[in-house]
Length: 255
Ligand SMILES: [Fe+2]
Ligand SMILES: [Fe+2]
Image (tube, protein in one colour):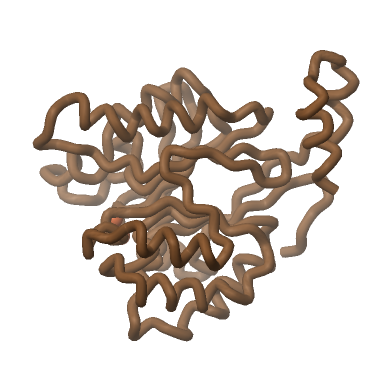
């Protein structure tokens, strides 16, 4: 697997669940993922208990990765009640942590949020993560877009888990913004025993990239999903003549 001038490649994986005991064990895995792709995308449950210590170990494992790393948090990153410690540590290590935010990698827009379904609270709160996803998607002006989540927006990729816990594994409310702001692909984790691939009702592919699932379902392949999008020709937009000066400047800044 080598990098390509005509495509942008993403290595995507969730549910690393970094622990103190795991220190040192993921370096080769991250190196392999970074070698295959132009960026590394992490779908939450980065740590096991959400401690700064675990985040430091993860940052250390990622330190040899020279491609951009973009992440969303998962429920385990909240386990200690101090997700900001995890975020701070990773941000200092150069990881872009998205919480209802968006970023751009080589012309591909990435909107990210945890997407946790809030089941017992008020409807307004249940809508909160969907709104964060929507506002992140609304910021993107790129022709190619990816949504990065920890929880699933559809049932298809949590099948395989006990049906009675489906409501805790995802939320169809997350699907609504994806219908209004179509993306090329959605990635999520969390459902360790779910299904690798499904589709939203408008046909967008949804990939469950929980590392334990990848390890179990594709034992012959490295446990990340390699996703490829065509690279937009850099001058297409300027030829159209309607692009703003700043967007054109941004497009030229990507070499
Ligand atoms: Fe997990
Ligand atoms: Fe999770």
